[in-house]
Amino acid sequence: MKTVFSGIQPSGELHLGNYLGAIRNWTALQEEFFCYFCVVDYHAITQDCEPKQMKTRVFDMVSDLLACGIDPVRSVLFVQSQVPEHTELCWILNSVAQFGDLSRMTQFKDKSQRQADNINVGLFDYPVLQSADILLYNAEAVPVGQDQVQHIEFARRLARGFNNRWGKVFKEPEAKLTSTPKIIGLDGKAKMSKSMGNTIPLGATEKEIRKRINRAVTDPQREKREDKGEPDNCNVYSLHGCFSTDDDRRWVAEGCRTAGIGCVDCKRRLADNLIEHLDPIRTRKAELVANPDEVHEALNKGAEKARQTAAKTIGKVRKKLGLWQG
Ligand code: TRP
Image 1 (cartoon, rainbow, N blue to C red):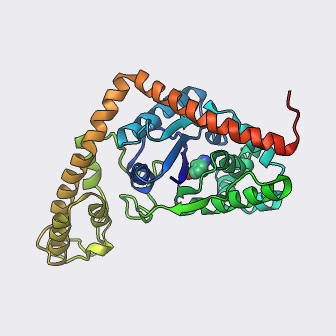
Image 2: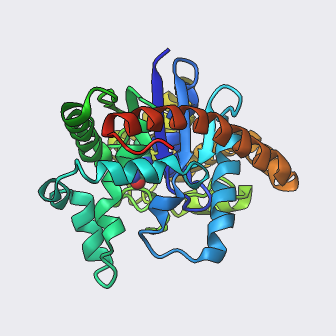
Image 3: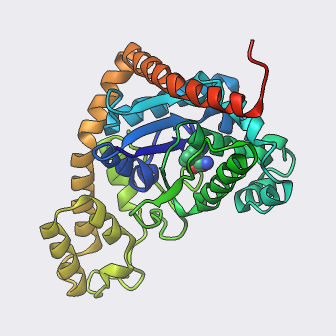
């Protein structure tokens, strides 16, 4: 079985964009691969993050992942800072990583602009820690969105650089692009994200879901009920593609093209389907919140499994480097 590794920042509760862009694929990957799923809290501290919020954000993220179907028995689910080998390997890889290479990372440039008053070295070093995450477990495939491909290519160069200098330890990982294309937010403009306020939290109530969908931007051609539209230009229709049956999709597409149904009908059907889809996730999440020990236990078991593999890799690395073995 091939090994897969992926990480997600503890940004608090999941929303529809994370779910469609990443988590739904993660749950499916478990069928085929041996998977590591890591909540990357050390990456999070490169941005402003209140220590008080850290624990709740990690808890929310982990319980959402469990509720969405990440199986802590089959896969290894853990928090990055539970396994100190991540930072240890990061330091070692720092001596392979090239300053010029890191300076070219577009995410670093973007983030430097966004937080011009806090361009910390961690932000610069971010891709090296990410490489350490992946290489520690000798992962062959890394499911990521397009924005992370540059970082995975970088991880490949680090693996090669290390192997050339000190001898073969690492496999070169490959980016596994998620099949879902970029999910446009409910505003019909930007990529779905919490900061843009154009998404729906996975834990939203039925009322909230309906409210947000009702406000979503649709095909601009359909100003009035009688206007005929083109579903392929419609944001709401693209979400039908993610949550509705073929029959429903046909009904919506046909009704939109002939003005047989209004946008209100299309939205109502989407809301119904979304609510039905999210209901079991919300129920499971509520159980976990009521029983936090289950979450802690899952993480502790995950970290234990992760540590075993990480320790083996670091053992090999130390030997290759000729580090002092007491
Ligand atoms: N940088 C990734 C993101 O922002 C998160 C991440 C950290 C990651 N370590 C990883 C993703 C390792 C894949 C593999 O989305």
